[in-house]
Length: 246
Image 1 (cartoon, one colour):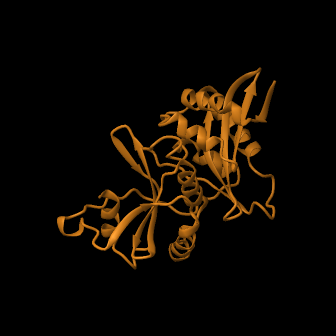
Image 2: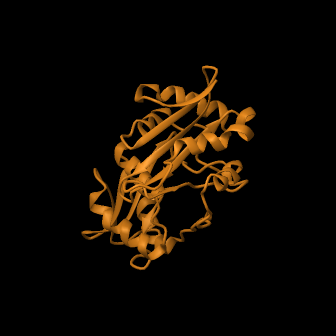
Image 3: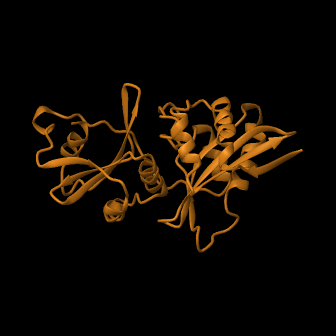
């Protein structure tokens, strides 16, 4: 017999063990992942087959946009072709409501690297066709980019980096940049809220004005910089990035 059930906060490790066993992605930080799964806006499900967990999903509510983000899907390889569709569908709202207007998902392209959960919330390439069958549609294609900082622009003159205890001071910047770029999605909002929960939310400021929002997570000898919200029309992206890199 197969059935789905919602997990309690005390069962986070059950879900994380399943994720590590059934995906090609690595679990970067178990403590941070627990924080993500135990967020009041996170909803986690597990699929059981004969009392054995074989799959699970994590969906994050985004009250700012009245939306949801499909942030993680894990299912045993032997069951992917047969059960992924029902696993995804059973995790999502059956119809649009006043509180939930849409559901976002990011899917990584074949061959592109991923940070792994919980810092990387994009889905593995194989799930793309399943999402289309489940009612999702392709919206925008995002690309990886690398910015080379030359000596003359690495100082971030007049800019400073400071931690934020709450997202509220930067909320208007996110809306403003989203309107200009068309990239106001739940992946951005939920990532910033997650950074707030971990105490890893940062702002780059020019005087009293916030011109960039991001998150910074130390992972061993590496630093992971989360999704960046920045209006390049006011300050060049190289200058703002230099403020983050020190």
